[in-house]
Length: 99
Image (tube, rainbow, N blue to C red; front, side, top):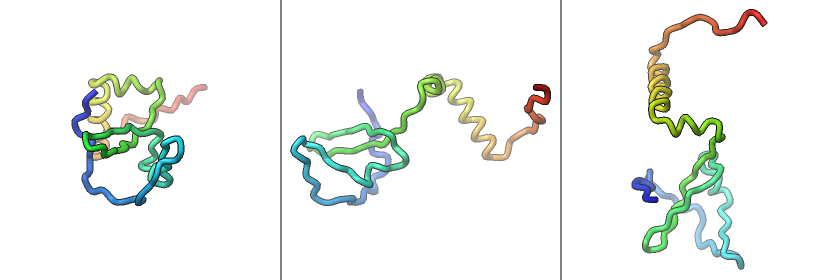
């Protein structure tokens, strides 16, 4: 699967120097792994062996439908944009007064 724009910001900072893999060829990332509340990482490697970890967050399966439905996602994004711009209309309370 090709991913066109993996590097989203080219302003890299050295986090740790000269980290060696352990006997099982694992690297410890420490605090570098807490990027943006990520729950997992996509790992990319280029032809010269450089590795990029792209932080990702998992979403519940019950909410995945929104990300899989471009029309619904566009409607939600449009609504959020309008709300941020103050383009809202008060429709009254939606609280159910009878229980």
